[in-house]
Length: 422
Image (tube, rainbow, N blue to C red; front, top):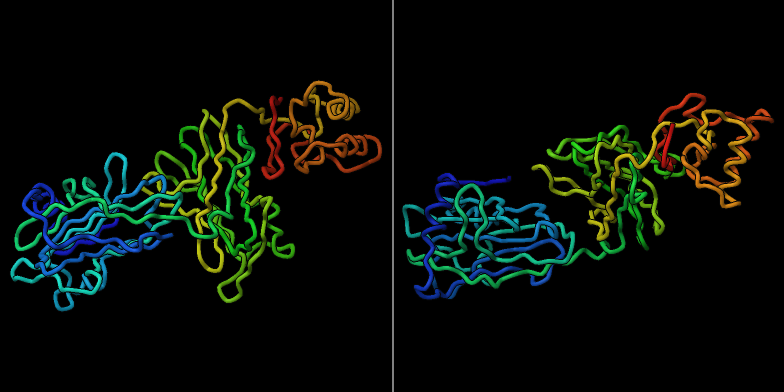
């Protein structure tokens, strides 16, 4: 939780001055809160507008749906933080708050404890709070009551000439996604797996300069065995990798987040590539699954904040579409011998025949696609029985690992999975 405090502690002030002390029904002052603009794709400003009133302090809650919006930054305005001749109010709190269903930002201020200092008049209202949001889905930011920060639930109110007046809560800003957001997507492939998944980035009609990804799973549901950049990413720029590729895994109790950050070029020489309408694999992951779980692109989990953005023209955009995947325990067998299509622990002509019959004669399905993918190119087709026959009778190359002993697939980018293994 990010907090900025001057004067007394936030717990004391929010509990005494602006929570329980708020009074309704004692007249409506000529003062009100305003949000601008009416429609925004990120920035929102809160101000206090008034006719001829003496505003001595206030408490304000701004609420949003945490599934649709994420606060990227917030702060009091320069005008507010220098309101006392270059100094902030005697008491000032600005922090994040929550209730059972909503998240948001709380601000409370008393201009002066010892003088009759009042809020200066300003054309269009006196600006008090600036915020920037990531818009994950169309929603709204609303003036609200009930958010809990460091103290008591906050009531939105204005203190005028010593009397605290409850405020109407109809004020809001509609939040829409940035123009490019609808042209960008992240997805997990395949939609269901018990071992290996790939994160795919797609962009329609636009080139991208980089991206950041955070994919989360429950710590008790699966163990991350491997995370690696895709082969396509390693050759993306004229056969070479991007300028910066960082992959790590960080705990976010009770989850684990796998992060990838990619910058295609440098600050002095930016590189933009694409579009990628069909998608480009960028990250491969391999898990040991203990129980079923959902892989999701995570923004705020376990008290940690993560980024899921694609950079276009130096600006980060949150993809409108983020398709999750599912980890399923026991759906696949993880040990096999490459080329041993019928899983009899030997490689001979019967494996080539077994693949041909499955592909062209409608025989029994292949029990382990990874084993049948003898050349390890990420698909099973006629080249696989030919590869086996060339290896057996014409001195062709041996199958890639795992071979000749059973083992796990060490190439997650081309892994196909198994219904059963050895």
